[in-house]
Length: 126
Image 1 (cartoon, rainbow, N blue to C red):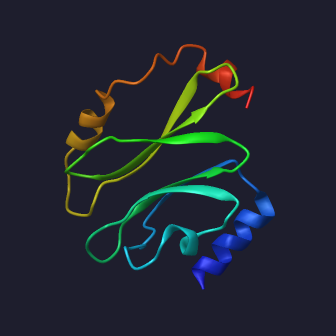
Image 2: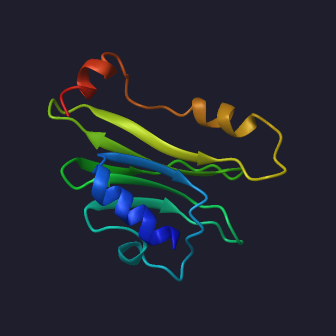
């Protein structure tokens, strides 16, 4: 069972952040059932079979959901809040089969976010 294997991998490696695609989760599976309780789960399920994206942020980090609408792709966004009050955005993105355009990435790259200067220096302080 892939769900059990995935939960075991999370327990063994204890990552702070996980980005995933092809989750195959849907509205019949509530967030608390889908993954481990050690993580805040941000997800966007697909309305048809397959697909789905998610971001897991470890409970030791402060995070918030970010609403970014993309009608031609599957994407979920969140921000991890840093100690200095700044934040770092994270997203999981999936372009469905049969879509051969870069339009979704171009559309998302134009989204306004906070300035990310010194992002690498900030990330080390997590």
